[in-house]
Amino acid sequence: MSFRVEDKIPVTKYDRFILHKELKNKGMIKLFPDRHVSSVYFDNRELKIYQDSIEGLLPRKKFRIRNYNKINKYSFEKKISSVEGRFKTSQKINKEEYDKLIKNGHLDSQYGLVKPLITISYTRMYFQYNKFRITIDSNIKFFQFSDIKKYFKSDKNVLETKSPNLNDRDLIHSLIPFEKKRFSKYTEGIDSLNLFNFV
Image (tube, rainbow, N blue to C red):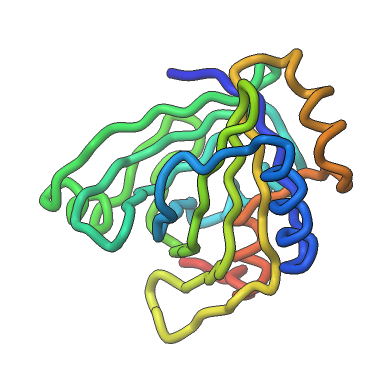
């Protein structure tokens, strides 16, 4: 389980372009090629994970199956937000395990049975600046898991900074002159698709 400090910043396409240019001039380097990311998010019948995320309650969790570049290799991930910070566990799963999770869901001690509700896809760019990592997500789309014809394309781009050291936060904030706010693609997707009658 890894601890990290994260800040997510929704920006316009124009702001993303300007910030990318400025940070590159200051020495930001690209880590590796862009990837297509797809994540299936789970919730229970009462949308308790969504509600806890909206209200900022601690501790809270998110569950998702993630894959990259549309290849049939999957990871089942659990993200935990607590008073100590944010943690993530990731377990590689095969296609049989993927199918089982999709069909039967996942049983959690806090949320009970959670099942797939929404798929979120986007293009992610990866950068390194000093000791911390920066990712930029664009072309974000939200799909209702049970009906892939129902989707919404966001006009937002999301810049995210990640560091294992809390002391880096002041440096990060000095470099990125945008308002920092709590942001979740998952809650944004639920709101955009109006998925409040999940059964």
